[in-house]
Image (cartoon, rainbow, N blue to C red; front, side, top):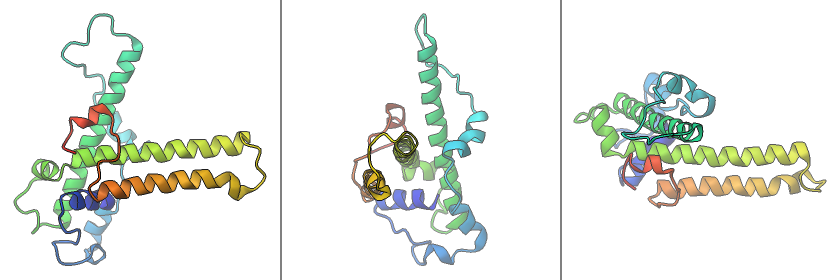
Length: 191
């Protein structure tokens, strides 16, 4: 959550130091641990998604909604649930670490003030990009998709892709609107 916090604060042109005065590593252990908890992505999202109602339907799904449409709706609902939960958890952890700084906020108001749902959507998109590259790495290594003997030469394009993903996330943190976000997340916040 610490990276998500920093991104949200940087995008709002706010200081990333704790209570605007000291570095994150000087926090007491419990708030430090809370902020350094990994985001619930991949398998870590399972408990959140298992507890959610992903079958919620829009106002009028239309007659004859097929299995593919229901599956797409559940995926969109899962994305929305995960964005909301990540945003709320980030806000809660920030409130616990910086009580004085955020004294006038509760979880929903801090989520709104820092556009945390939208930031969460970008972190999910970043995770999806990294995982797509990892799948390519595995396929290339396991299936020898390219006739290359050198391990470095085989890894180089994927390392470049991963570096590109990290550069995109860093640019987003600095205020760029570079990361395309699924349409479902666009309604979650501002750019």
